[in-house]
Length: 492
Image (cartoon, rainbow, N blue to C red; front, side):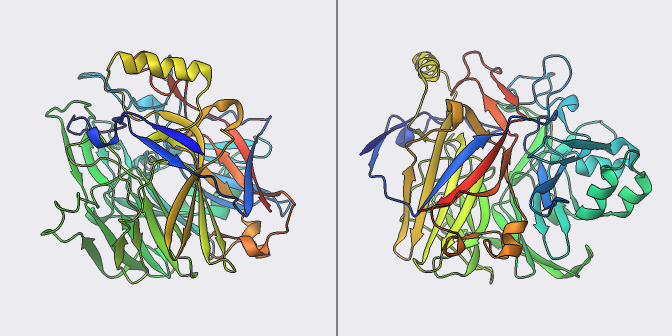
């Protein structure tokens, strides 16, 4: 049996009302560990890229060797000049900048995660309108392997004139093979880069901290918020904040950004929203496309913050179907990794079971802590500071059948017991889809994997690394990382 200790909730980003969440404080959970039909292992890569980055958009194509992967990385935050480390934003009052301009990634980057080889193209060589839309953080994005287009919507960043910060209202498409090919040249041609980018503006795309997904040709822009102006941790008069409390659906003409018809918006019934706990009032969670146990593609929203009036995360998943319908899963209460982190997706057709692996990040509960991390957590907790959710080193799993979702935690923490995973992402190998090991939406088909043989399925890159679960000194102790880990799946 495994005992999991519940911890205090944490304010992660943007503004909210400060109030304790008594139902999530100092609680415990007891759970049995199942024998999963696979094992996931994480192997740190020795040759790291020079670029540290978190909260980026990305797309992957097959490397020239036909097996590896090349990533296009767009936007996000990085270490800035002097002592700015580009980790978790700070919580300082005016006139300080909690999102310093020099921490925003103002380049299009190509990365070979296996070798660390990296190429950069400065966005300053592009029109300011496009450069501003591509240098945001926490945008929504999705990659279409058929057209090789990366779609990016919204995100939070500095305006083109540098006067203030805002949520972008842009929708862009990037021709990934064209851009990667040009960026890797000794002298990239800005005109050719520009030719591979399309952009439109519309208030419907003005969202940050949500997710953009494509189900059967229909785009879903799910949850998130609008935040304009300077971030202030404890309120102020120089910003505007509004959660979308919805998901939006729209279609585009193939290969263009021209919409077909109007945008449809789905809200939770207003006469039930308060009693239900405002289930759509969430952002910065893990919103992914996966499968229902019977094999139907769908979207599932896991975690996210903040419950109105409470510095607490959401624990009930929301399933969104291709026809626009949804269901809140009131039978499951998620304990791990409520904040954005790498999520691996598996499906066994024969077992009619969907599996998800959530890697590190930030969450309500933890199992593993090193002696140093435990001492830091205990020290901060005794000070009764409102530092909230801890960064964790745990790897958690979910197994979903027609009977519902079960949650488990691995006996093995991340390598080195490092606090990784927050605002990082999984870079999948495109060859998995072409070989039949992955479905069209990237979900791995467990039934097709060989038994007993480790198979490289991709890489985890970047994100925020924390020195301790909670900061010993406020506004310190985190940084954007250049860490890369190989991810292997062994069917057993």
